[in-house]
Image (cartoon, rainbow, N blue to C red; front, side, top):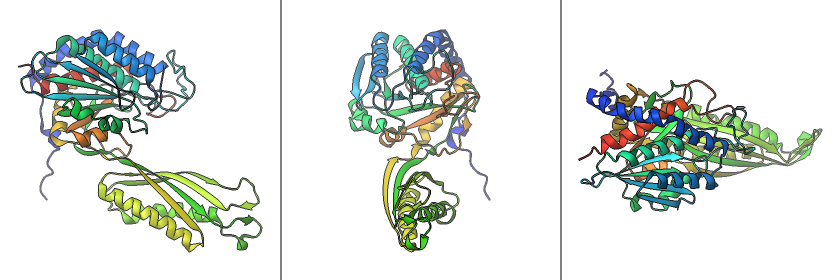
Length: 409
């Protein structure tokens, strides 16, 4: 067997001169840390969900104008904000997009922090407050220095958490309107050392689909099951059978996760066999072929299993975010910048969560990287909190993407 080749980004080594170049950037962000932290904590106190990011979007737009951005446009993808920063020169006509997400989650915060959410039932439980603050910090620095040849488009996106805000911004023509050449994104990652980086080329985050299954049987008295078609029993068999998609239909080296996450029957009584059972769940895959296979098998297993018991299954299947695929060349570059900032960049694992930055990477080459958030609660947990110590490193990576990809002429 031939030796396994290292991933493209693992083969790129950090030149010492790049590290020397980046140190002043990190120092500047260390100076800005109290200010950026204050922005982040204000955003954390005032979370907004999906496309209802009106306060957040207004704050972002005001900051970008205050920084002296050459253009600030609101209302892209409903409530998204775009800022344009021109370099000292523009000889090559290159435009780089940098994207942060702004929305929170419908979770009641349990951190007890002094800057905890003031909005019951809403919380920045995924760190989008940190992403927005870090990109604002980078925008402030880039507006001050403009030490690059080209243009930067800073993208502040609503509705990453299930609303498809990235798709909406692309549908509004964002990429063509500003002639974006490449686009880069970042996400904090609990459990990794603060300020460390991790990335992988190719498929990275999973495609995330949703399904609903309604089992229609024949209800009746619990004492007379022979006179019924027990929809609850049918649902139990369907749930078990759906796991055969991963265990017996999928290639073992191709990833698929099928999860039934909710089940509700039409009966609330102890002594009634339900007429109907309603189930919900998700399917997560890493390739188009597996996505197609999972959908087809889910429908066939559900209807076939129900039919075997004399029941009927109605299946609705909704395709959500596509698989997020990092482009090889841009991933190698993003990893090199990460090394210049943090000294290292490790190989990230495949992640079965979804990420709607996938829509932007379908339109333009680019890459998405993880930055360590340290120990603590995981994302989407009521005790999660973004680690402000990661801010200087994250901001420095944003700035490095621009200054190293479009060096001043």
